[in-house]
Amino acid sequence: MYDSYKKLQYKSKTSEDYKETLNKRISNLVEIPLLGKDTQYLKILNPNVPYMKLLIHQINEEYNEVNIATKTNYIEEEAFSTCVIEGARTTIADTLRIAKGSTPRNKSEQMVFNSIRGINLIKSLDLKSWNIEQGILDIWRIITTNAMDNSELCGNKYRAGQVYVLDAFQKIRFTPPAYTEIQWRMDSLFDFIKNTEIHPLIAAIIVHYYFVYIHPFCDGNGRMARLLITQYLVKNGYDKFGYISLTTEVFKNSKGYYESLENSENAYNDITFFILYYLGIMYKALINANKGFGAKLEDTQDNLNKRQVKCVRYLKENPANFITQTKYCDVYKVIKPIAQKELNELVDYRLLHKEKHVNMIYKWWEFEI
Image (cartoon, rainbow, N blue to C red; front, side, top):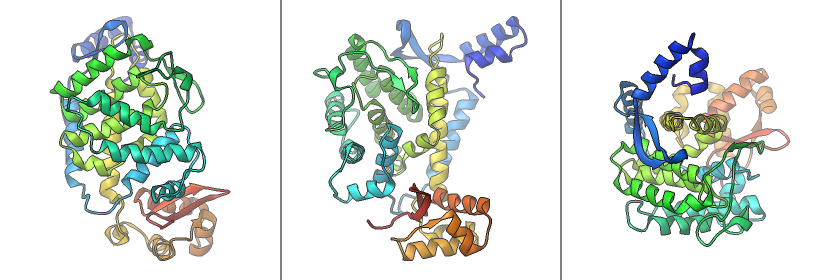
């Protein structure tokens, strides 16, 4: 467990214990060529320490097991999750409808429409080329078309004023650097992207972190950073991440996301907390992929009970229909906690997806709109 510095001090019995523990941690930190606050280099836990090497090994093992031959709804799932994180009020059903060509009806749907376009475009962007900045600017314009907040701070290229990172409750969780620092910090990020020799899994997370740290635009920074982390992985040998939505896992644990950002704001410029958070996101996403991301029923039914198999077969054959927990209880004669558990397992297997209406409803994952 990599405790925050506050927790590290709290758990120490004496000031001497804390000093010894602190010195040991600091000795295992390495600098990366990106400046944080007080123009000090950011630091991370040495990727060569056994703990980090084990995490990378575990992720690689899961990655190698992923079968991407099965059709998935990666783009739709990624667009849905990345927009909902930013406050869009939409559903997977609406996302699928927009992906099929429907015209956006409101700002939330416009955000989804823009994200789908941005994801498709960034797949062709080579982050190791000399046109990284222009590519990012082009994609940012797409993802904020007709759906831009803080437009009064929109400069000719980057933001022209101060912005803040807020959580879902509009609480300030992070204050980015002044807008006058953006260009030179972005230039250093582009240089890092082109020249770093850090392991791609960790480098991708650093790219995401530093982009969010700079917060170069008046709006759309989170969506842009999430596009960048995936594309960096794809362009550096992890092409299967082009079919797996990391953002879906971030959406499930947004609290941990903001906590890792807060913990990375410390006196030592140690951003290991964000690195470990996102390595965990990658691992969980791969675990879920290997459990049956986008899988057909026959690929996963050995892990399901008879009720679940019957339920999925019915919804697969009747994709316009849905089931609720109450209906599941009535049809399969189980109590509500069991219905909730079994239906949510089907969601985890990507056989069903759920939407909040008057009640929570569950539908076949690949249903046609």
